[in-house]
Image (cartoon, rainbow, N blue to C red; front, top):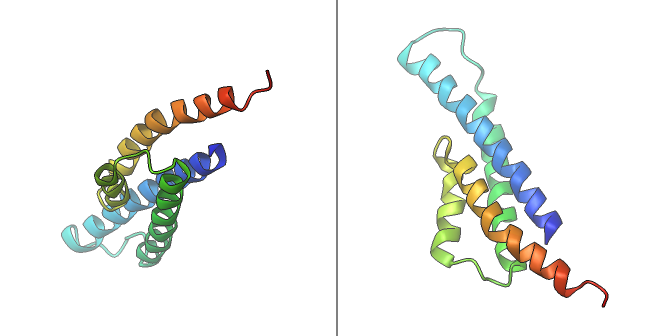
Amino acid sequence: MSAALTRYRVLAWATGVFLILLTINIVLKYLVRTEHHLGDWLAMVHGWLYLAYVLTAVDLWFRTGKRLAVGRTVLVVLAGTVPLMSFVAERWVRSQVGPMIEAESVIGAPR
């Protein structure tokens, strides 16, 4: 489960960073109306990262034995669509899953 948490954390950060870049790009392109925007490729990269983020969040939910609430898990998945929220969701998931990993390692420790 530790590897699944690490995968989730990496994708949460990557999705969040690219969503911030995409938001800046949209502001530059449509509100400021400058020709110096970051590029249209950002939306595609964020889309693919978000898809991987959703898959890893669902994978982590299954690996925790569905001990995370379904409603909260849906909010975690949706956090990848709101700027800065994937960072908040990552911290919440880490605080919830971290003790599960520690308990799992204590139970699995040799006696």
